[in-house]
Image (cartoon, rainbow over the protein chains, first blue to last red):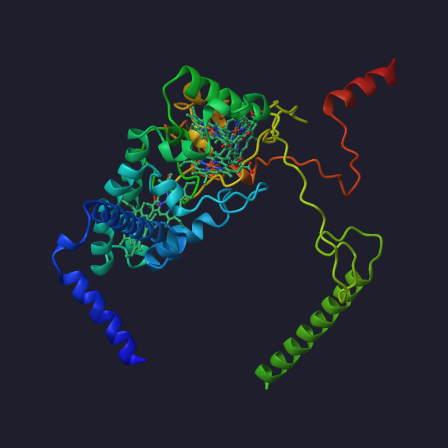
Length: 200
Length: 163
């Protein structure tokens, strides 16, 4: 049995080592292509794994604070049964944006190792800073992540509550507000809002 | 000796009070036909069927007040609105400086007064927790009767009687 495996491996090694003169150009091209696909796929799979909620809340900083707070909100349970998970709001689905975001995320590993927010107190002290960064990001990309699920083009204002319809008409259609301008704190508790525009 | 008798006396007093209270408690368990908001008159060893959650009014129509000093009911949903040390979601719409953008109704000036009647620059601390006084309404059927008569109906009624 082992000999058989050894033989196969040996043959493979010999073929692998020998100069490419034995193979046609066509074989090399196709092989390279398949290899590329495999590599790309593996990369993609790794990216997907880091997009699951399980991954995010594997760190207690995320599990004990923001995850607990999202449980009673509409993005965790609702009549339609559609869930928004962490990465729906915090990692853009767009491929290039995705890599950019992942590079930034490496900072979090650093923060985890050095315990920047490893107690509730530290988390709360740090919260305004983190939330402000998120708000800036949503404002800069016109709330792209929200719009991946909610598109104002397809919002039927007549089916919304009068208060919502009026605000959306004024802010989205006529004005230049974006979702996060009015919808702060929909998924987690807010930091001290004194001095944040729109909150007195 | 004095100390001893005082102790004995207070013990007796305490016991008789206790007995009286437990009788009272027994009585309140026995009462039938009365509204029991917690267990809906279901015996202790049985499981009550919970009532459905009723829909919260969200029509945004300003409610009539039953008397001028009544805190108006809230004509919209307030699910998950955060009101704590960090943030007051209500004031993000109802504050003097916010109504231009949100077109909500400004809280009346009484919310900016302290209890001596001085006008403050900001919301008075005693008015910070809005739902102490203001509540949203649901379409739940009312569990008890209500004989409230509006002041103006009373006046109209007595005028008609005197005619």
